[in-house]
Amino acid sequence: MPVQLANTIIARMALLSAVLFVVTTSAWAADRTLSANASKGNPNVLFIAVDDLNDWVGCLGGHPQARTPNIDRLARKGVLFEQAHCAAPLCSPSRTAVMTGLRPSTTGIYGNKAWFRDLPKYKDWVTLPQYFRKHGYTAWGGGKLYHQAHGKFSDAGAWDHVYSSRSGVPRPPEERRYQHGLKEKFTNPILARLIDWGPIDQPLEATADWRTADGAAKILQQEHDKPFFLGCGIYMPHLPWYAPKKFFDMHPLDKIKMPLHKVDDFDDIPPQGIRMASRAGSIIRGSGKWKEAVQACLAADSFADACVGHVLEALAKSSHRDNTIIVLWGDHGYDVGEKKFAKSALWEQTTRTPLIIHVPEKLGGNPKTKTCKRPVNLLDLYPTLLELCGLPANPKNDGRSIVPLVRNPTAKWPYPALITHSPHWHGPCHAVRSQRYHYIHYNGGAEELYEVAKDPHQWHNLANDQRHARAKAKLKKWLPKKNAPHFRADKQ
Image (cartoon, rainbow, N blue to C red; front, top):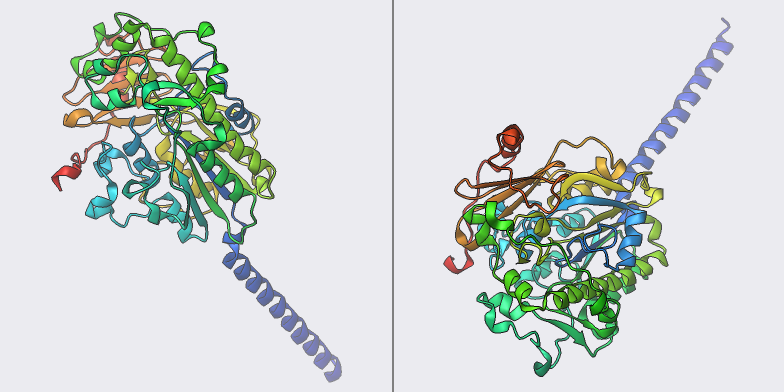
């Protein structure tokens, strides 16, 4: 080969190598830039909590006269989890579990007076909004997201911005409270204070819950230079059931349909279960005021739905609608007289709660099937949102991501939902909810077992039926191996 030709080939190869080096280096640099800016393109999160909202919403069919058009519309867009259950049927333990990603049996937070940050082990625990903040998000919080909307139990330091520190609705004048005449009959002072209902004179826009919703709506109308985690906590339908008159008018008293109740319902349950059933249910049912209570609960549900609708409408009109994941959840159920009249029990009336997750189509959402019948737990929200938003998993979470069910609601799911409650310092009790069974294991060993497909009201305890012994044994394997001691703030 002539020397001149060889030199030409060598020169061209050197030029090609240089070009390839530049291209490769540029691509590598571009990848690093994309990686560095990844958080700027991550989805936003709209995180809506509704206090004490049971299955009395249209899409869940808990009461045939529920009027919740905004929640129902969201259910048609997203995935409705028909068997979502709380981690605990009480406000603070449930919300602590959601926000910390830890079970009550892990933290020892079983009651409303215990605050997880008072425990040295959890003083600096990274909660769900804080985890998003660590990964480039701005966290906004308003209303009741933890146990309270303000003060120590609001964990205000977990947020970049607290845009609302009030919740609920105004109380009517003293002379218009407790017109049911039952207050003195309630032996539990908390129930005596809370169990009341009636219309108020103020319009919807004058309530703290609406102002919280409006604060979230205004944030959604703004432009943001970082992705956001926006928490919006609606207090209603938590008792007392006060709401503007128009919501009572939506549910005329003379047309109210009553829930089913079995008079001898508790004949086959153990004493520990009966202890969970407050006397309030029998008092209200026997007073002739039960229909009024049902009307008031339906009115409170419709009020909460209006607040939720205001937030959802603001998102739909914003530039964030195609890049915002919506999660709507209730912290636990509430029994309006079917078994008892309260929460704080392990039956489905108090553990089942609405859960809707909407992932916009541009983010890979919108599966053909819109409902999921697999049992899931609110504890799973922490790891689920991390995965949906492309954030690294938090290995300290007790829950598991339910993203496979968000993508395909009919996917196989072998996991039951675990619910924990520890009433009156007697020690933790648990319920295990599979798709077929609802199993309750009380401290001390007493049990209840219901085949829910055949017995949706949980009227027939099968715990001693040997035909279901094998199923019961499988469910027992999901009980916690260890239970943290009951953390009592008054003992610190």
